Length: 135
Image 1 (cartoon, helix red, strand yellow):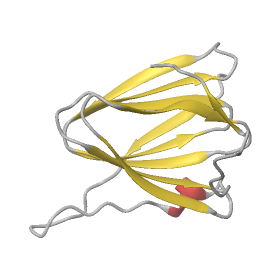
Image 2 (tube, one colour):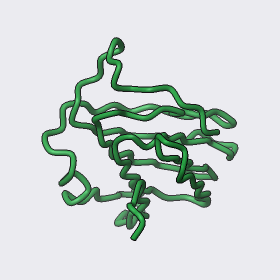
Image 3 (cartoon, one colour):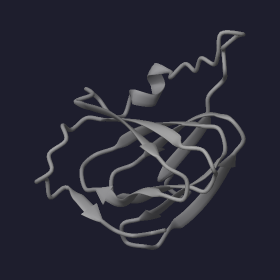
């Protein structure tokens, strides 16, 4: 059985006439443990974020979108690589295991927004994040 490197889950919109509302279930964070870092970012049309992997860190990324984007991933040894295109309007949860290169490419016309959770605090001098271009 092949190890799951990345899990992508579409979240249900529980919103109403006021706007959308997406619930992020607790189970998404079970493998992370104590959350030490949370950050939010945008990805403009045609741009890519990621193209790296974390040696000892699993991440959960929430992506809010209103157009199209690609999530790409590859094992650090380069043996397993995949891409998944998501389009329309909605929100997905992406769970990324450690040692898995990952990138998000906005191929739509509208910005997309990401909210990233991990168990390690961000440190710009941390050698645990390794650049690896996959898209």
